[in-house]
Image 1 (tube, rainbow, N blue to C red):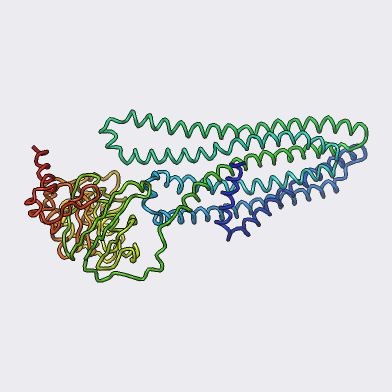
Image 2: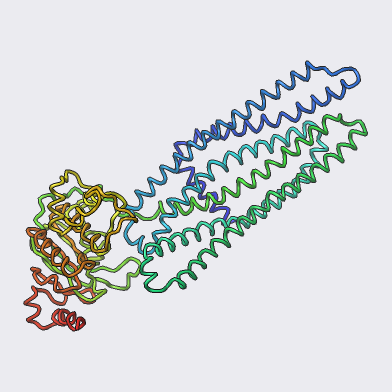
Length: 587
């Protein structure tokens, strides 16, 4: 009952989602029902034609009457085919449009959910909802609903026509078929859970494959192929088991209804022969009933298959709406404050923060500092000290638990996230390049960038030689077949940040993937880039931040030391130990 309620709940959400298309869908379903009803009229007309030919065997067949019935049948079947074609066209158009809209809504939703959602959900699982689940839902709606409606109309119509034609034979067929319907409902009740499990396991498998593929090099270097393969086989087996059970149970339906139909043929022949010998019915009634049995049992098979597809579609709909109904970032339409002429003064005032998933584990504990406009601030400390978290809070990727962060005296909580993001250029440790030209990757989401700007930035970053060595320069396509090192990818992302020309800058291990010589080139470029801009630099190589105006030394979420490089070295404290330890390790 719970699974059944889940199915109807999911389909109810789908109907609410496409409520503006409901009248069109209802019209298509009415056409499907009309097409089925017209088909039901055929056996009665064929029975009349059979009686005419039987009666005319001795005296001569009335061909005019037979032709009239034949023309009527052609018109009926032609109208039925036309109605069916129109409803298929309407349903395909509506469901494809709905799936296109749904993918757009899912894409927009990705940018509206908190970052914490992606901390607890695999990327591949989210992608599976956008691709596999939407496609499954579309196919289920396009094929299942019209089939179920037309089959139901045909089923009810057949019952009516059979009882009108000969109630005793109709009663025998209904009793035989009732057994099949009960078995059908029993199978459907047990199969729904496997359809839900199939979609869930498929999402898990996709997430695992996406993660392993993106980290393929690490996997090979770590010689973890056997372990990964074992995990893959485990996930793959789960998908196989759920698929096998769902397909097995749904596969029972077709042969089950075939058996019921064959039994129905036997009953019709036996009972019909007995009634014909008594003179209770004409021979044409038996012919009509043989056709009615076929039309009567076929809808049950269609309904069973349609319900199977509908179960799969409802499982996909549940996963889709689970994501669409995920809590979003707070609405900021009422916020009017906007920073334009930014000086770059940043203040942290008694900031406390812990991740929503682990509220008891404090990451940032009572952090306070003041950054003057144009200062270069380096954030250093051991792994897990809260360095990257601090930057994420500054960008409002996460909301602080208490305290405040201000830019030019305005709390970031009073600013729209889009406005805050526009104030910063970011270079992260993980590079991101997409399949496109070098130019497209550099000027991503920027306008008015000239070739002179590209040349200037590439020269400052030491990229000029690399770009001009490519077959088509800035118009060279970057793809999996293009050989490009990790350091070159990092340089391209740095060049992109320089082109953005934002008033503030965040560098999170920006030189982690480059060699010493390239690091020196980038360092000079960074010094030029950070002039007049407030910049935050996270670095493990402390030699790269010696010229910072302020160095914040973090440990366990607290700033335990602050000052420039020389001041901190003179103190001989934690920073001094960190700085000297890198040379000890080198030795």
